[in-house]
Length: 117
Ligand SMILES: [Zn+2]
Image 1 (spheres, rainbow, N blue to C red):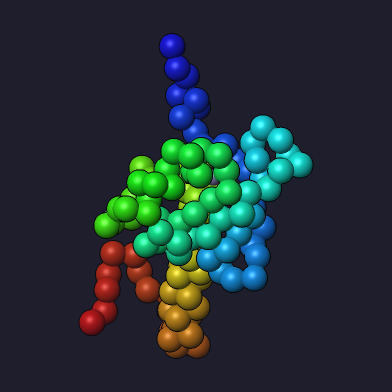
Image 2 (cartoon, rainbow, N blue to C red):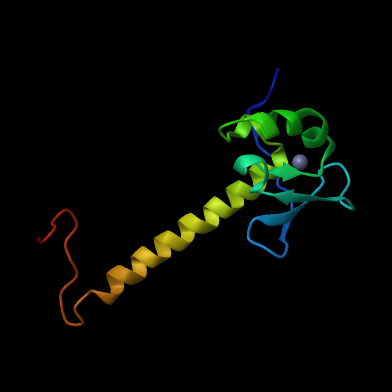
């Protein structure tokens, strides 16, 4: 019987390389090993140095017309998740700063549920 947390992806360390789409991901079984990941290869499916990707997924990834997570190893998925989280946080911060900048210095705080148009 599988426990719910068995489906959780592992938390592996990642390091950015020379471009925002090139990363290293630490191996789950051997912390000494880091796999090189490129998110834009294979029509944005990505490419990874791990055995799972090279022997099982690379062929399908190279032939696929549309990128999706079924063609990605866990290393590719982990890096994409981390980047998406960073992007969402950055967008949320931008939104907050935009709202703060447009607030009148002496105005009373807007009441929840009421939106002046
Ligand atoms: Zn991999």
